[in-house]
Structure formats: C-alpha cells, structure tokens
Length: 610
Ligand code: G6P
Image 1: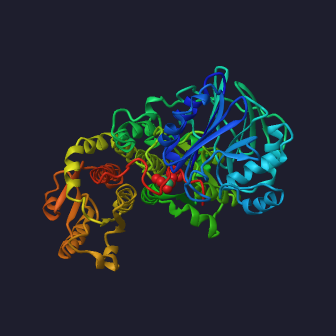
Image 2: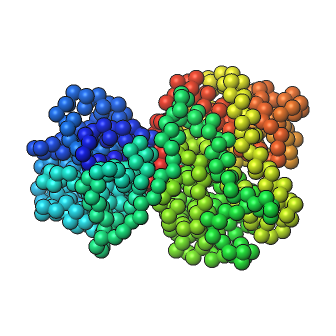
Image 3: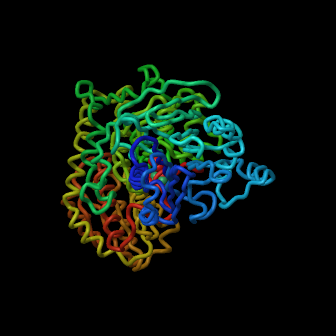
C-alpha cells in the first residue's frame, strides 16, 4: 500500500505529482508529501490527512512552481502513527537526499542504531527515514551508487524513489517486492507505484522487476540490477482508458464499479469460451492436456474478498470437474507448512496482484514444486509475473477499497476454470455447452439486479440503525453470505458476520434479537427449504429477515420480512447477481449513514505487509 509518484522532465513537476497522488490516494491516505528540487536545495512539504491537505499547504508556495523534478508519496501507516513527521518524503543527512518508500525495511532497528552512533538524528519513527539516512551516509557524489550500496544493506521490501540536491534532474528508483512503473513521455518520465497515476500522461510503460534500479533524467533511462550492469526492460502499452480510472459521474468509485460489472464480467469472459468444444480456453493457464488430466488437486489461496471468491471456485471445481479442491487463507498457507504435490495446481487470487500474504503463498507453492497460477486483475503486478501461468481478470482498475467488480470477475473466471477442468475429465460436450451458456448469461443477470438499484436503496433504509447483522447461506450461497457480511462491515462499520445457515444455531443464534437483522440467501435450488427453516428460527428470536430470493418465488417472499429479487438461474451463477444485490445493499446503507465509502477507516486497497 502507500503510493509513490515521481517526475523528471521539462514541465513543472508539482501538478504532475499532485494529480498522481490523487489517483493513488486509494492506496493509502493518512498523510501525504512532496519533495521538489529548487536551485538551492530540496524542499520537502508534508501534511497529515488527505492529499487535499497537502494541496492546500502548497497553494501558498509559488516558489516551488517552476521545479521540474520531484518525488511524492501518499501513506498508509506501518511504522509510527499518521503524523506530519512520519509522512514521506524523508530527508537524508542535511536535506541533501530525499526519499519516498513503499514496503518495510525489516532490519531498520539495527540500521537506526548504527546511523545514530554515526551522528544521524531522526525526526520520525519510520523505517523510511532510516533508509534516507543510510543513502546519505553512503553518498559520494553519485546517487545511483549510494542507493545500490544502501539497498544491499537492507532486508525487507521496497519500492523507492530518491533524489539528491547535488544531481538536479535525476531520480533514482528501485523495487523489491513493491511495484514501480516508469511512464515514458516526451522528454519526461513519470514514475509511480501504480499505472493509474501515469495514464493521464502516457501509455508507454516499463514495469521494473525485483532488484531493478533505474536512474532517470528526463527521458534518459538507465536500468540495472542491484548485482549487475545495465539491463533492458521492454516497454508495454497500458490498455486502460483514463476514463476508466475516473468516477464517470457516479457519487463514489464503489457505485461506479458496481455498475461496471456487466461490462467487467463480459471482458473477463470475452474470447475465453469455446462454443465448439463446450469448454473454456484460458490459455494463460498453460497446462498441457496431460497436466490437466493428471491434476490431483486445486489449492486456491487469497485474502479477503479474493478468498471468498476462491470458495466459490472450490465448490465449482469439485462439483463439475470432480477434482479435489480446497481454498485457504493465504497467510495460513504460507506458515503452516502445507502438503503440496507436483500434480497440485495452486491458484492465487488477487485483485491487486500485490497482496503480501498471497505473494508469499505463491512463493511457498513454487518452492514446493506445484503448478502455480495467478488469477489477477492488475497487469504487470508481482503475482501475475511470478506465477507465469496467469489468467488476467480484465475487470479494469478497481479504485474503491471495497472490492466489487473484481469479485464477480474472479467468480466468472473460476467457473470457466471449473468448466475447463471438467471437460478434460467426465463432463460431456453437451453439458459443457450448457455451462458455456450459463456463464455467458451472467452479465445480463447482473444488469437485472442493477436495474433494481432504487428499490434496493429503499430496502437499505430499513437496516440503517442496527449495530450488528448476520448473513446466512448454504452451498454456493455460503461464500455469498461471507462476502455480503465483509462488504457491510468494511464500508458501513456495522458489525456483520457471515455464517453457513446451518451453523447459526451452533452459537451465533444466542445473539439474535429484534435489533439484530439476518440477511438470508434463499435462492431457489437445493438447500432452499432448509434455509427457509433457518429463517423461521431467526424470526422466532425476533430478528427481522431480509431475504435474497429468486424472482417470483412466492414461498420465499411470503416467509421473509423484506426481500430483494434476483433472476432465476442455476446456483453456481446465482452467486454473481446475489452478490451484486448485497453490494448495493451495503453501499446504500453506508451512503445513508454518511460513511466515507471509497476510503473506509483503517483499510487499504492493497495490503503489501503481512
Ligand atoms: C485488502 C482489501 C480487500 C481485498 C484484500 C485482498 O484487504 O481491502 O478488499 O479483498 O486486500 O486483496 P487482493 O488485491 O489480493 O485481491
């Protein structure tokens, strides 16, 4: 998390830096800062709070407007609370060096003690200031060499951008475990930790690899690795439109992203369904027919929303392909020394492709010799690159912290994966064609839920005042209950838990009373009758029940207190429209409560620490 922007070129740097920070604010937003080169020194300005605070601070500083080189940062606190002192950039020595950093320097304490003994004074509690002083202590007139020497001493992860007063116009940037992308412009380079900060200026980009270090001056670039000389990194074209990265008239990014889902899912599906063979293509998986046939088990790892999508994948892979499947929290997978075989496929699911725990699980699986694939939205992200056999979601940039279109695209791709595995085994062509049609229908099913937005907003009005809620479902609707509860707590701060409908009576039912509503997934299909029985149990404890019901299902409608209808479809695809209904419900509850929907407290879009 945290965001980096840096600029070297012929234009004034500040507008580029500040607009880039705004674009990256979703990555971290508790403080922000810039450093720009002036004829006499490097000027650093920082502010606690959002980027707008920094913009206000700088509005009175006309002397900085002509600077054409600078670095900037928006922070999500790891070491030390969100204060002005702890905000980046940090100065090394006597302001000769300025540096911004994403990631964590793990040996910062030992380095801090050593630097203190050498006479350095620290103004902040951050590991980043340690790095800035370390670079300063090794600086002998060449910033690139000083940064290389410093990075050889640090343990941990970093994406950094640094500048030195004595080398005007020069930026030195590097990465290990935290992304850095170079946007190539006319006589200028815009550096960022995420391509969304540069697309306004250029679509030509170079993604640095781990241990790459780049020296930049205007459009002059020299990229080398920490251990060797100059290397060549090919530029690629960013295919996001800048419109896609703007709010497009919606009140919040989250609402925009909810409404983008028919298109996002269509993009995820496009060109991947084989109407001839009744299968899915997914060539990025890069599995030979033999590897497919010998697949022993599918292990799915992810965090948060991505893990909930993984659970749908587990059910679908076992259901259709008859292949063993398990989903596991990525952090747990890494540390509990799991049993992984060469004939296991580990599928890492991540919207950002940068989540530290998921990345660590990927590396663990690679070390254990499994086939490892990434199901990732962000092109060029670390997980996408390290897994090699990836399937991109193509859902477009997801800006709101609460994940929406990534989840529904993940589920759509997982269903295609299940179809592909199933067709390599027992599933007939005819059954495969049927599933192809079901997957193709998903965008239209979602649209039918979106068309009920106003009605869902009305239902939300009845669920504003509660402080606690339960979501229940069974079968394919169990992951939907987990995801619905996660969404509600993330953005509305209402305590919400998702449970298997049958599990409620093994403890949580003790908490039910009139002030605790239950949101029940009562979709028509196997298990519905039992869930309606659970609904009655909740009502008997005075809970108000909001049912997600299949359109026109009179029995379900008559049982629940309030309802939202989703179109009739098989349960494995009903996951998607039902989740969309719950996204809208959470959105409207949070909106009516006046919550900061796109940037909820304490959360970050991409969690690159363990
Ligand atoms: C954070 C976000 C969640 C997201 C999770 C996993 O916690 O706030 O919305 O589901 O990370 O992120 P990933 O990018 O790996 O899908």
